[in-house]
Amino acid sequence: MNKPILYMLIISTILISGCVSTVNPVDPSDIIVNVNPIEIKDFQEKELAVNVMNNATAPIDSVSVSSFEPFGILTGGSVNIPARTDKPSSVILNAKVAAPGFKDVTNTTTLTISYSSGIDQKGNPYIKTKSVPVQTIVLPDATLQFVGFVKGLDNLRDAEVNAWQASKGENVTISFSVKNEGKTIIEENSTRVYVEMGTSRMGSNSSLTISNAMAKGGTSNTLGLQIRVPNDAPNGETEVIVTLKIGDKILDSKTLKFNVRL
Image (tube, rainbow, N blue to C red; front, side, top):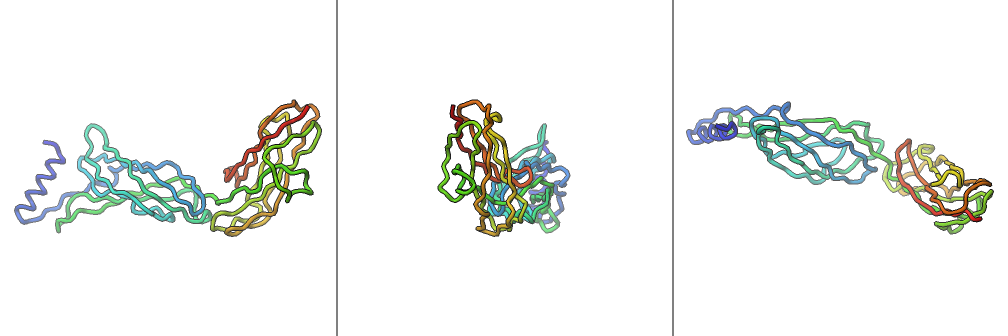
């Protein structure tokens, strides 16, 4: 007889006879939980897909995400997972979480699921938990703003444009600023803006550290970077990519069009 059916018959017999006997719960070692690494910005929300596998010969019920500290759980489903047959039974469990401030998270967090299984002496199901580490990165919610070409470093506050033409041997100026869209202070000298040419022969790359701190809604100064068009640059069009990073992680990116004249 199939073991899950046998368990149900035992429980039914106990209830009908009026006396209660325990049925051992599924051990957490028989539950396999997999979550992909998570990358999210400061206080933003994200849907998680948690793969839960039951490797036991008894089913588990009311499986849900019970905690993911220091993240908040906004919504989460509950599923029942049958006993294994020739291989573990697998179900995707969905949950929406809200990130804390980016300074409140280390590289690893712990996700815990709960499930009901077995019967205790009072006839109630046991509630068990299974915890797994999750690779987690929470980033500042910073964005680039007012990105574009201007005439020169003395014209950084002029209206910027998304496309520009220049001759060989000229300097080309790109203006920008950074805004903190999150709630956590971004410290001075922690973010950097990179300007990179899509075609290396058409101009030099450059970068600049954002030197001021930014609280919620705060911005950097309007800044500028110059790229030099080589004297032997080929004429034609290329992209200019402006990227905001913290360490090696990209926070925001904008793409401009640049043309070298004959």
